Image (cartoon, rainbow, N blue to C red; front, side, top):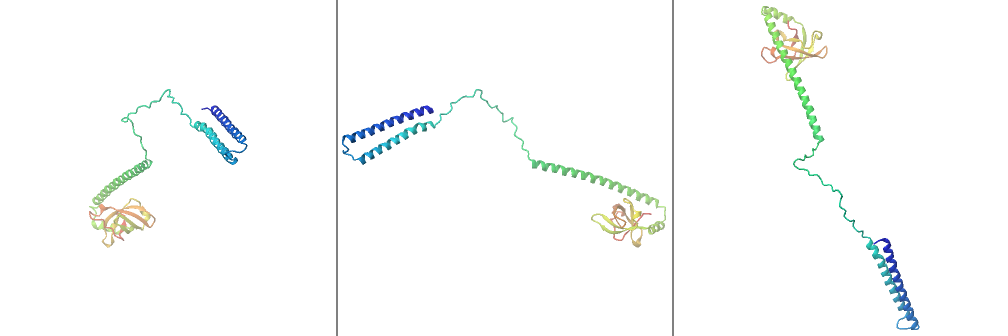
Length: 251
């Protein structure tokens, strides 16, 4: 129902109600005038009746006016219009579909850290293997030197060699020997005559003679230096180094 149709209907209902109300008033006035102002009903009763009729008409008028508006509040549903070209979703075979790959950044970081650590371990292992090869080569050189010295001294009288060892100048003295770490701390006497990597002999007290050999390490200052024992030089026995042992150049 359009707005114009609603207004026309409301105007017609109002005209009819007003006409009916006017006829009732005229009838009441005519009845009152015919009876000479007296009759079965008093003036107050007539006023009450008139007021009652007025209220009833007012209620009907308001009800009639409200009905078309209430009906117009309900909007008609839009007619169904089919799509011109309906879109049909493509069929996806679940067997061939690939599940999404979930990337865990924290896991990637852990993997990267492990790879870096593994690379460091490999580098350290390679460095250790290189150092072991160098130590093995040095041990072979020392063995060859000992063998050559033994051959050269075969023709020398024992007393002469012992005298040379006894007269050799002291280059350093053993200050501390850490057996677990295999490190010798030296108290240097003639640091200017020592070089890193130099092979030196260990001379002990009055007994004389060389009881073993060491390899000079880092020279910290004119008074402090470090050395490593040469295990093969102790005549097949354990490394025997004591505090106070004298370090000399092997004659």
